[in-house]
Length: 107
Length: 506
Image (cartoon, rainbow over all chains, first blue to last red; front, top):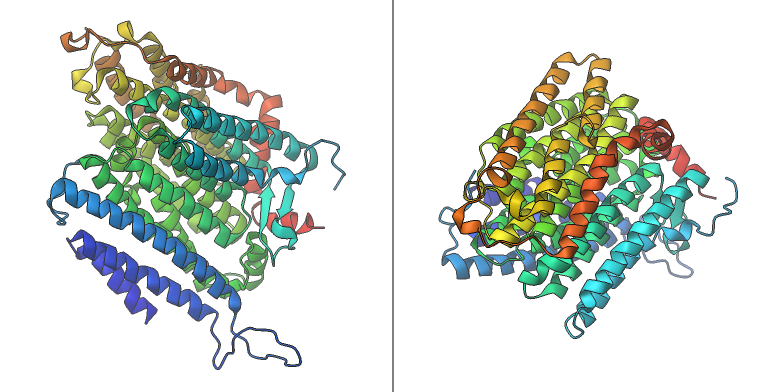
């Protein structure tokens, strides 16, 4: 599942010509990685890792990946905001989202 | 461990991240309102960072590896920061360049409107880089890496013109791919070892032994960090991104960012965490050599001065990776020495190109000529930089290249050594081209009215060229022992890293 999502994302980045579609591809690939990280910490019939009194929680899911992914999602948000704003600026300058037409740099 | 009689203790470590982060915050708050504040304050911040990085060098020499436990949690549960001799070596390099670059920016950045924004992003990038260097935790490394990368994406687009935006977009897409690969690699490693602490991870990996997942992880990291280091199959973003940024930032990006995020992280993870094997060492060597040759060949054909320097960066990074890949103590020593030298002379050259652009308004080599007569400081310092990078004997670049070639011969890689010599000649060729077209010859009519760059810009260029001239002194046994060899030992010791780190936790 993650692998499929990741491949779709990478495919979008590599093949699509539209800036916005590339950004969406990045988003999909990012979520695939996040999902994979969550799955690393998953256990079948796991419970939320909350320690309560009198109750010994067994079979917890690993809480660490969840915390990590929270950070990764925030980073992803920042990256997406920046890349979208740059895409908007590009649209203002070039008047197009097509990367084949945005070609000033060579070599 | 002996008690530390020095006034500084391990509490020094978080300052490397805290100072730039805090000053970025303050600059963004006050820089807009108080005139000249952002200049003074950022320079103060980078100067203090440089001084404490020198202090850290003393500290490591005195009391060995220092571990700082963030928030008092004991690793491997908590996050730790590690200061060993490799770290302090990298910290000195980064903060030295950062300090000189901020001095330079006082004059240079007058052309742009929002100076305080520039300084804020600059300091954030510095915080990220220092963080990558000091951290001892895998995920923490990823977070700092992203801080540094995101601010560098924004800095590349700082001019908000056609080229800058396009370069920044390209750079971002590549950078994000790299980060995703790294994150995926971390996820696999975590599932394999159930820990994120680098030292603990390396211990767990040693217990598991050789397996497929570890190999896959190595491939992912090689792709991720290779993209950040701009090794040749992954280099496409660099020649666009580096020239588009303002000159001080090009100096930072080419001088230290690709090294801190790319080469340092690669070396740290492959040597200290995964453990270097014959396969990965030969992959390093092959990638390094390809980068050397291709970067050099592509640089030869460039007409844009900054673009030429950017391709030359790829070529020089190839040298560093190749030398580290040899894996012998001499090779690693040579690699680190070349890394330091390259940081110095490449920043010098980018600053030179900045002052040329400042004075003449062009980056096209064909439109320049005879600049030395009008801009003596820029002219002569770039002569020093070019000669040093192409390996003319008394200058620093000669010694490190000599060492790299010697190390290759010592390890019986004769073909690689021959290629390294040839690329060195190639380097000389394209730097002679720069010198001939830009600085010697007749002054073009359109350039009669140009003036030398302002004082602050001259100051940092002169400082860098002096370091270039004196760089060879680092090889004198006494200095070498304290600065380079100690850093080399960390990598040579490889996976002993785990014992050292876990041992120094009380």
